[in-house]
Image (tube, rainbow, N blue to C red; front, side):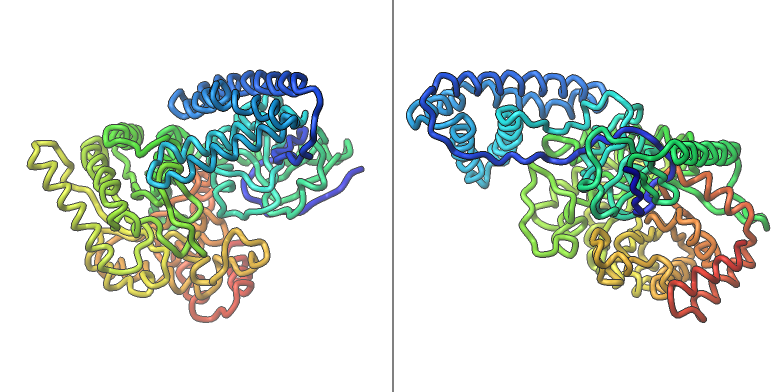
Length: 575
């Protein structure tokens, strides 16, 4: 039966395809006494063989889409599956306790996991514990006869349906087959939304309960522009979605004509339209979409996609590839923003009540535990600087003393490289990401010492409104156009300009079609967004007059009291 759902339109596009449920199955079982131990051993052997076949296939798929290094994690999993000591102990437990294979598997693997997790100062052993957990889940699923979902194995056109998608889930999605995704939780600024826009996959997030309503293989129609999802659409509805998809494709073709055009307003003023990336391979999308630079390179994905700390040379190669790929256009590289919801298996982050307000980003870089990691990254960046126009940005800065401490380390590493006779560019700009309200309020003091500001609105909004951007209960408080947020942004832009510095924005708000006219009016210099939003924003800017937009921004800043009033005002100026 047809049913309709409304979610948050997170990535534009339209798709109609079968649902693929990326949901963990129920792996609960009963412990049973058995008479025929040899039958249980045979069941175990069959589950081990099936798991090996699955992992070998996943590994070869991952090598094709992610590269050999990222796929090497599956080698460790395959080794666990053929570990004679562990398998021997499971079989011995079946025999000695006359118990079923599921129970013996869990008892023995829990023991190994406990031993390895207990070695807290040994990162390698901690990783082995994680490998055993993963493999046990797969063997157990095969014993129970249930399917573990694997995004890397999708080989037909589908709409992925999930509670949420992790960065590693999205990294495994093949655009050729994954036509859209729909989740229970998340919003426009969650990682899954940002990844969807980078991959140009339509996405509707925050539907609350799509995973309960849809069955594997049911037809789904998804509109990532309006946030509409239809389960088992009628022929008429399928036609309507196809028509909407064609209209969007036509609109994209119209925007594509602006690829090589300058970003100039109706009254001839130029703004810089840049794009955000997570990996060197994303540069292609920036160039294809006419980006005039990279306003945010999220380097933490270098760390997250690696089995250990990336070396100085590994990082140098990645930064060099991005700088060369942009062919002399500016590239803003953010130093590692680890912490919050971005963890590393090989770096021990403490359990925190609220990790987003905890030990993360520059706070790690300036600590004893992160100093060496930070220096390695800065050396790699400085070495790569000769290959393009590099700008370095420190994230999560609250205090001027933090910026000074980071800049001091940067200066030390630069001097060290120069003394070693290694070439370093002499025009590198060093700035900060403004995402903490304290820094936004003190922007006039920061502006005297930094080369630029880049406003990270995703976090600035959640910190200002005290509302977790991933929490559906308080999503109404995530208000980019609230006058309080606009005043903070205006304060930062004004402070930069008074010191002759530039101000950019790398949060999702920079490509938001309601926010763009306001930001133009405030004089924001650089807008950095998902590459897929660049041409649409260029098209919008071409139609707008900056004098009128200044008048709009001034009214929004001085006369509006609510977000709704701001939205109405923008509509009256841009129709």
